Amino acid sequence: MFSVKSNFEIREESIKEFVRVLIPEILDKEIEFNLESIDKDILINTKIDNKKINFKYKNYENYIEDQVVVMAKVSLLLLMDKKYPWGGLIGVRPTKKFYTMYEVIKDVELVKKLLKELYLLSDEKIELLETIFYKEQNLLDRDDMDKINIYIGIPYCPTKCRYCSFASYEIDSTIGKSYNEFVEYLLKEIDICSEILSKKKIESIYIGGGTPTTLSEEDLEKVLIKINEKLDFTYLKEFTVEAGRIDTLSIKKLEIMKKYKVDRISINPQTFKEETLVKLNRYYNKDEFDKYYEIAKKLGFIINMDFILGLPGETTQDILNTLENIKRYNIENLTIHTLALKRASNLYQENYKHIELDKIKIENKINEILKEKNLKPYYMYRQKNTYDWGENIGYALEGTECLFNMRTISEDQDTFGFGGGAITKKIEKLKDGTYKVDRIVNPKDPNAYIKEFSERVNKKITFFNN
Ligand code: SF4
Picture 1: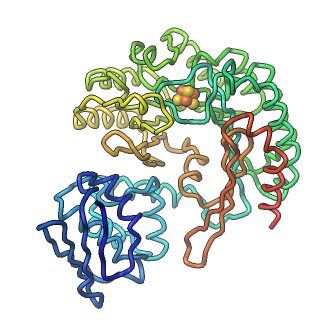
Picture 2 (picture 1 turned 180 degrees about the horizontal axis):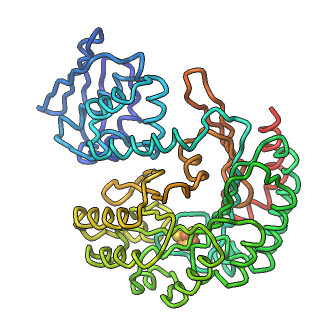
Picture 3 (picture 1 turned 120 degrees about the vertical axis):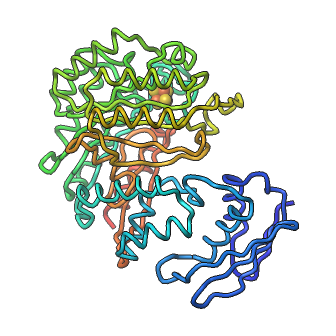
């Protein structure tokens, strides 16, 4: 049975989570940590069965919170001879880790050294984090706490993709039937809450979901009119709508978005292999896709395309074909995800196992595209249960980076969330330069969103008035 013995304070649950994610084969073992010294150097002796290891590292406790615990966890990787590109980091926001370490240490080289030697990150991952760190330093004003970002969640899609774990319901489904009422309540929520937002400068608006363009043309226009009427665009730098699936698009919807000042959209093939998309319960047609891409281009939108590596049944060659096809599109943003199987997805419940992929070939191809299109990484995050513990990376042409995406990951500015599954975040900058984040989450389910409407709205108003 799993147990942890130690001569210092350590939470068994936190070790168990680390082991569950990175070394599941020792989930039935007794682990013993012995802290032997904590002066100039910290020395930990770790034992499982007959295996033992000593891990010694300079004491940076002024810089690294809970260094002893970090070393205890990492010593397990060393003991079990486990090597991962992300070493012992299992959080979903490694760029935030880099930034918060920098805020305390104020020395990029030391941050990199600690990530390499203490957390065991690979040079490649450290380089990625450093690139994004400098992007953030250039693009994000970290002291401007008067600004706010707006997220609006539309929890509907025409069909549910089999890998999906997002807030997304089919309009005709039992839960999705309240669509008309949902739109009504969303408009009401914007009406009521716009007053408290008048005290803030809105930096970005992002309509996500689901797929927001699942809204009918009439409802999409109603929502955009409401946003234009009620929210102050004086300081607005970007307005994004996820138009992810072509089966939700029409020329009129693109024109409506343009008319109401949306300047960025996401159209997401995920793969160019039609057979995969059909299996995933996701409509795709190349000619229609190209038609909407051309129109969106003519209307002058900044276009992002999302792709997923590791989709069911896809081989390395399928992925290489998809990547090759990206060359045909003149996009400003490209987001490459690694398939994440969350417990809520159909695929997870069916115990789907992925096909082994040739990572080197795929990485080389991605680098070729990035070079050709002059796209640079600007934000990234990781997800639990992701194939090979990969990451999701957003690339952009210089000057077209999506600030909302960056703020969502760096969590250094308030966000006000409207609609299904939207997260409202209130951020406080602490004396050491790091941030405290308080959250209120709107229910994903539209029926619960409607039912708890008044309670949630009042809570958010109080939250922002204090
Ligand atoms: S389009 Fe996105 S949100 Fe909608 S079902 Fe597919 S994965 Fe889920």
